[in-house]
Length: 439
Ligand code: PMP
Image (cartoon, rainbow, N blue to C red):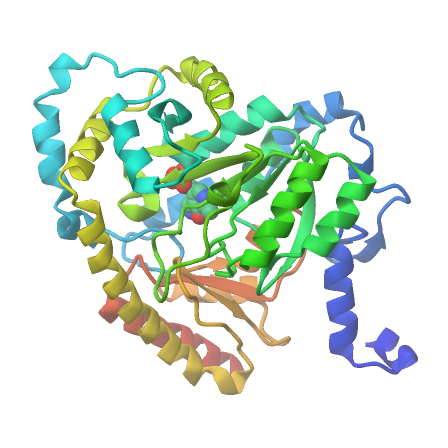
């Protein structure tokens, strides 16, 4: 406030400037003590920055958001859950998937193990499903235990502790936790409604040499934003220029609420630099733990060698998925859930609109699972999250999606896990908590 007065600018301008500086890694904040300028040479400009010491301590110092989140339902089984990013328990029934599991279980005896790379039939179906010139053979696909394992394998192959990994900021906390636990240094790139800021990325690439770039370009988690086609092209051009591998996490592509999203980076990729990652966790259920990586053949072979270290992905899930895709059941299933999600998103938006007088801001997502809601200055995101949890509603708060400890005046509300009635109830509870605050 003092600084704003001295400079005769609004407080918001100062807050925005700090956010940008922080996103670029030029300043950092320490809770309770203020903001500090980074060492003159940012830590990430020096790839050999005592990485060996850091490697030992990384696991201990990385946050454990994933476990925390998964524990929510164990701890509070009756909570109205806007925290978990999935389609909720109704998906099992509406997809008819359990029938495929039952019939596949009978075949298990003839599949002691599937191939390390993944069940050939499933890989064939995935080639058809992706429908990309760049992925024309099942040899280019590796089935993994969820896309999280895919990311783990890719990162282990491409980067060593101390190496730099570029990501959008904020971003999916599971990826941040993984990079931090493996001892990578995260280079954050700010975003806007057109996705990753390519102008900022260009400046970073001129200064240092990251080993890989991780992006969720379509219906980004947590912001819901989608990278524009022109930025996709600019990103690919930079990747070619700097020989930078791009990991494209496309978990939400088929979950559009409106028109279809722009083409994937992989489908625009002429250099082979894009490694494509996807999962059945969002299309069906995360408990399946089946995802896949699609890449050029040599990299897919390397990944398969790496995958061999955990043997294979579970056979039953792969058999059931192969049957589900063989029968053409995925497309109609997605049509049903998209319609459901559209209605659910509208209910959540209706409630958020009622909160508008309080200064809450959000953009209606065009796809994916989340509302990324900006809170007015006087509402503390973590406090709101804790107060609502006590009243039986859970959601995630913005600071979980940052690579550094910092306040982030956002909450993420998932509109796909609960059905309409529960969304209505949950949003009323949040509304009540906000009203009580004012009294
Ligand atoms: N990537 C993104 C962007 C996600 O949001 C999630 C789940 N929240 C995952 C990957 C994890 O996927 P999986 O369950 O396949 O490991």
